[in-house]
Image (cartoon, rainbow, N blue to C red; front, side, top):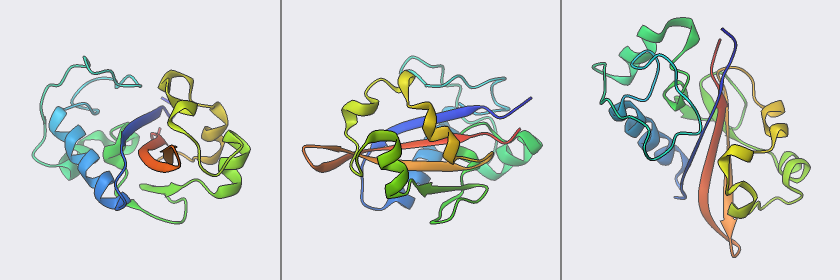
Length: 151
């Protein structure tokens, strides 16, 4: 099948792990994950269908998805400083500068999530995620989670 990219743009909160867990729960409850639906198209739009959770738990959905994973944020279990499977880690300052020309990218730099710089995907392995804090007027405003499904 091959790995598929995915992304989510959410409001900033200082506790990144709490943001991750809230996002996972939201997407599980929406039913926007494989195998609840055959294929998840990103970026998700406000009018994307919401079928409701099709499993008893996130863990049950992940197990049912098998080796391919859910193709969504559900596959990302925790925040880590290392890039490991099933984790989200921050882009390093040098990576941010390489992609955006700054360590503090603005919301405007990714305002259209259809045009996320492809270079970001060079830093992400299958089953992994990175997150980027986006700024407005020097203050953190949004968090962009970007990842690859397993296969």
